[in-house]
Image 1: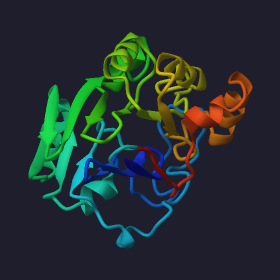
Image 2: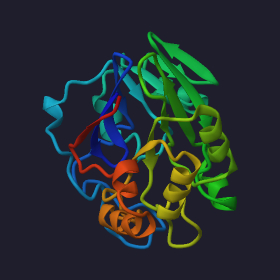
Image 3: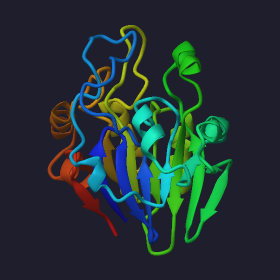
Image 4: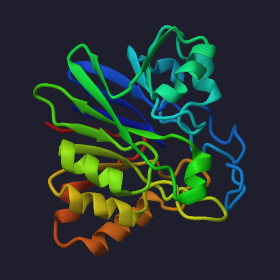
Amino acid sequence: MKYRHLRHATGILHYGGLQFLVDPMLAPKESCPPIRNSWNSLKNPRVDLPLDLSSLELPRYCLVTHLHLDHFDEVAKNQLPKDIHLICQPEDAERFEKMGFSRVMPVDGQLTIESVTVSRVPGQHGVGRVAELMGVSSGYVFRAASEPTLYITGDTVFFEGMGATLDECKPGVIIAFGGTAQFSEGDPITLTPDDLLEIHRSAPGAKIICVHMDSINHCRTTRDDLKRFLSLQLPGSESGDSFFVPVDGETLEFR
């Protein structure tokens, strides 16, 4: 598999001979308002995409983990071809159809796409009342012959269901949505550095690609913060062997 990180949760995944655009947030830098009830008033996205959209050859498939604006924005809604194969959670399917997308592929349990099997697994987008307000957020497990099992966490905190997913699917690679996204009050709604460390302890053989940082105003953990944390928490080469923190535009490949 190969993953090209673009920005935040947006990337291009090459897996099982197919290509997937993941969570397209395509708006220009600072063209959108800050996330409401955040701890600062900075405009979003915080940085530009590392490429010109006109130069991007769109994959045939698009995975949208959930329908929050930092994972599928107005630019994506307006610029993606309406016949793109759009993979999503069942709760979002009707909204995509109302946007005019004609090939919506909700994952209710498991979906087979040519040589690739995609399974939906639970996420928990926060704690308590905040999680209820954030709505349904899913993770996705990809499997294909001659590929490492891939787990895309989606927006979630570490919770019992994630531990069960790691035990069951035993991923070789994890794309983890970190950043410690948080409102001005309440607990984080995405993975914290401690959560990422817990993922590593639960799946010590997995390669963990850490994304969802340095792009949206309510994410408290930066890439540099995370790297410092991991270097202090993990001995020797364990941090570099297990964790990957790509810059925007960087490509990672695993076999």
